[in-house]
Image (cartoon, rainbow, N blue to C red; front, side):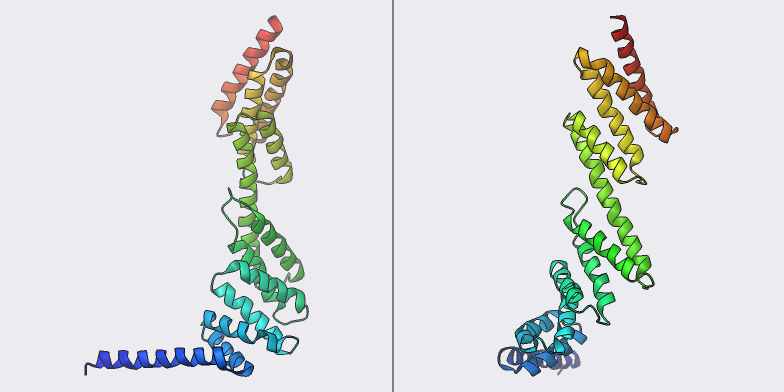
Length: 267
């Protein structure tokens, strides 16, 4: 017999025996057998199998010393299976249930990271992003000397950027929909809420564009005041960013606003 075929047959036999042994313990084994095999599967990084067995024997260990270990391994199994919704649930349960556990620091970090990994693109719902930032801040405050501090700060920065980008895009969307008042309010709130945002220049530019359109399109009785506010928006952009990348467009809007203002005064 070809040696490769021989090795393959041995491997298949081992796998077949392993699977039948797993199925036998899962369906007819004692709680202790399930727990032991689940732990072995977990240590061998066979997380799906481990979860099946842990779930099968969980009630037998409820309130017993093994429960803490099982809860942690279940959370970590879901995390390694990239089921971050469930890993977040189980890590939160662990952090709440075992405040004095030696695994609490790691569980709290992975709770925050689970939410961050479940976070959607900036233009979609940001519920998990907000939760992740909150949990990371809690982790940073609780464990300031953790070796996970650099990674935590990096992730928080990335998540914060996503939140700020979302806020900017909302203001820009109002502008595109010709809802200029809503755009101005939204962008003002964004600038106030995120003072150090890297999107401030773009936010001020779109605030100017919305103010410009509102001024130029206004009915006569409101036009003069709105043009004045639009010119204030221009000054604010240039004050914060004298060499703004939007200088050409901003100056074109300023000239048009001043032209319209002159017409009003001479009418």
